[in-house]
Structures are given as C-alpha cells and as structure tokens.
Length: 425
Image (tube, rainbow, N blue to C red; front, side, top):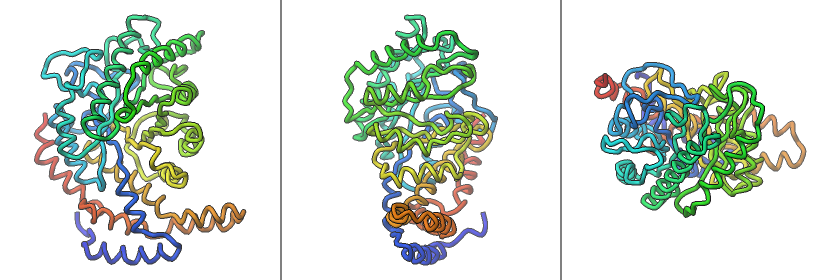
C-alpha cells in the first residue's frame, strides 16, 4: 500500500507526541514498556472456523456457527501453525496461543476425548517452545455425538455426564503439562453449551448436576503453578435461548466459592450489557479472571474485535484498576468471511491499541481530580485525551517491536495469501 510513513517520519511524529504527553505528566516510554509486557492469548479456532482435526466429517454444533467461505482456511495442524506464524510476526509484543481439545494430533488414529493425553499435543508444545509462546487450553464440549442432546456436564444421563467429566479431567492434566513444559501457567477454561431452547420446568436440577460434575473435575489435584482453572458463563445460545445451565450468576458463585477463575466473554451478555463495569466488581472477590475479547453484533456473533468504545472501556478498567497482573486476556472470535490471518492481526492490534490508550492516561491526576469532586475538570480532561496523538506512540511501538507500521501488514498478508492460502482447495 502506498503513502505509508517512513521510519524517520514515525520517529519524528513520536518525538512530538512524547512532548505532548509529557505536558500532562504521562511517560510514553513507560507506557510502551508496560504494553510490551502484556501477552494476549490468540485463539486457534479463528484459523479453521472451529473445525479442529478430530474428523473431517465432524459438524460444528453446540450453538456455534462460523459464517463465510473465504478461501484458504487451515486444513491441518501444520497449516494452522504456519498461519499463526504469520499472524504473530505482524503483532507487536510476545503472546500466547489458546488451544481447544479438538486440535489434538493423534497420527490419524481415533482417540476419544476422555482419552486425550499430553502426548497428543506434543507437536504444539514443541512449536510453542520454538516460538517462545505460552499455551492455554479448553476442553471441547461440542461437535460430538455425546453432546447431541444439548447437555454434557449437566446431562440427566449419568453415562454422558461421566464421559464429559473424564474429558475435563484429562484436559486439566494436559493444561498442567503445558505449564510444566513451557514454564508459564496454562489457563484451562470450561465452557459447556448446556441449556433448553424453550422454557424449562426444572431449572434447579441441571445446575445441581453441573455443580456436582465440576466438583468431581476439580477434586483431582492439579498444581496451580502450572494450571489455572476457569469457568465461563453465557446468557443464551443457539438451541439454548430460554435457559442456560451455566449462567453468569451460577459461575460467579462457583468461582468465588471454589477459588477458580471466572471467564468474562464480551459476547456472552445481553446486547446492551457491557463487561467493562464487571471487572472491578468480580475482582473484589476473585484473585484473577479470564477475559475473552469478542464483539457481538445483535447476538453472540463473535465478530472481529474493533477499536470500539467498549473495547477502550475494558482496557481502561484493567489499567485504571491496576489489574494487569490479575486479568488473563484472550481473544475469541471467528470470521470466515475475510482473510483469517488478517482477522487475528486486526483483532490483536486493536486490543493492544486500546490498552496503550489506557496506559497513556494521566491516571494519578485523574484520580486526584475525581477525589476532589471536580467532575467538570475530570470530564474536560477525559475528552481532551481523545485528541492527543496516541497513534504516533502506537506507530513507534510497532517500529520498535519490528512489526509493520500502519496497514503495511496487509501487504504481507496478501503476499502470504498468494503464496500459500490460494493453494488450499
């Protein structure tokens, strides 16, 4: 693409921006240093539309839908890793990968989900070591015959329930192995699709069954130094429009009572509800939370993350609350209508830009103004910040991290598409 800034132009613009921010007491160098220490967990399922490698005949289910038919999706683990390599090379900073259990590599041999073991992810660990990445993990409670009823851990069928309990226990062991081998804790997140399409008579029993299942899963001792457990709620889903067993209230109570992480997914609430206000509320009672950055359009549609007001508000809440060490930030969207590598890059860069904007606030000054009761000055300063040249600081950060400035990354993605993605039929 033409009209991209030269390195000198980026550096000159940054020098002016640095001076502007210094005028309000903000150290741009400190902000960039803090940003460099933030790791996002990219979601593997953006690269292949949540297909996984369990079976080429497996149909996506559990209220999940990937829409679009853009060519070039990954068909094998090697292709997916290749696509991720390109994505990581275009995102500033050092990051992680979030894997689902259906991305196991079993050498073509069928392995049931409750029989998955760390060796089925050995190549992922080898790749992660080579790239310097941490790994996070998810049991996969959908796209399986034993989930066709719409119920897994809360099923009335004891055999079905036992199968999924065993799957979750196996996945926690895999997560622990990731942490041991890579030297960074793996966050293993439990989300289930369980619920009713229409209004149920008995809301209590499925939740008591789910509680019992979770208790059994967590009764198996896992070293928290290597694995952190998380539970993820939802308001509704396709096929569970009227009742979700694992509601937000259920999991909030469970997380607090059992000392596990609560996962807040930006797409799992009412369309007019936001999660930025929830972080300080739940972190008053929990040590850590897992955050899934997504973008719903009228429902939990998992669109690519944009630099929206809500994304900025989420970043502000994390930074203003001093929660950077207590919030694990992951991405969760899957758009099959655009280049899948570009989706990762756009969403990740937007999330990082939102965090940089928050890090460039004169926080101490804003808090002092607020405590004094001068809400007029608070409003004026917050609005003034919107016009400051944060983009020049972002460009300088990208330059220092050795990734393309501006939309230059699109050229590299399109070149990769011509060389590799277009060959996939």
